[in-house]
Image 1: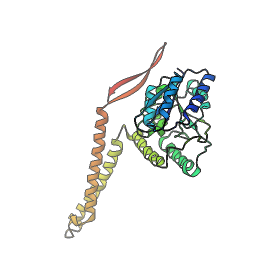
Image 2: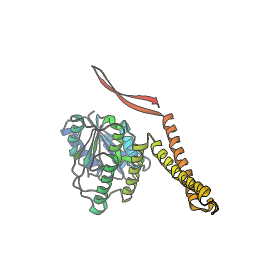
Image 3: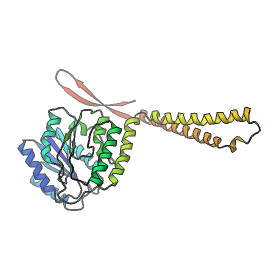
Image 4: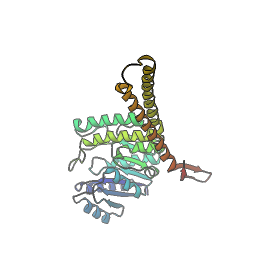
Length: 324
């Protein structure tokens, strides 16, 4: 199978049939072997009934239904587990992503050697104030934090080599950062393609301003995990030692001052430096212990290592379980 198209959706009954026909037209004109996976993320309209009808009319269509709304990340994760195509295309169901982009995206993965290609909606038809400007700020912060040089992290139209989607786990609201997850998993050949963005034809957007707040919080999470997830002692241990040194410095100052300078002055416990010293040393000790416990947990769990074995006849990628 050449291509698997994964489409997460929520209440998109008006656009599903049109989107299906458009994708099928592109696939047939390019002679692709394909499958289309519609992931119904707890729709309350007739979306699931339409998907069932499409599966009866077209054997290349499959549907996955969640009993309630879990979010786009969980929908994509379910789709990634089920796909069989060599190249996986993700796109939104609202007709704002153009299926005509699929052949070029497939070519970039299959022929040009990219492991992931992200769409870039360079010209958008969204509100400038409520979506365009926050999106530009969000993408700038994501580039600076992650080191992945993409202009549009949140574009739903992306292409993946199958080994990428089988190697990453998308949870929470991390669908915005799949390129970062892929990079952290060892897939560095990430490209970008300018894609056509279309005005929304049916219904209204399911996302509000809160997605940008959640996006920045998720960005901090993924930055921390990618930078210190394997070595928490480097952060917590360093901060703990710094805090303890500050506290010990204040304690040493108080001791020297009381013993040799102001012997008959007020009690050490009456001075604010005493409480600063005590709090700093306690916080420092707790931070150090947090880093130490984190290191123990990481070293005691099993990790997966990806490696490639090559010989004269074949090249295979395998999974090895090892314990640090």
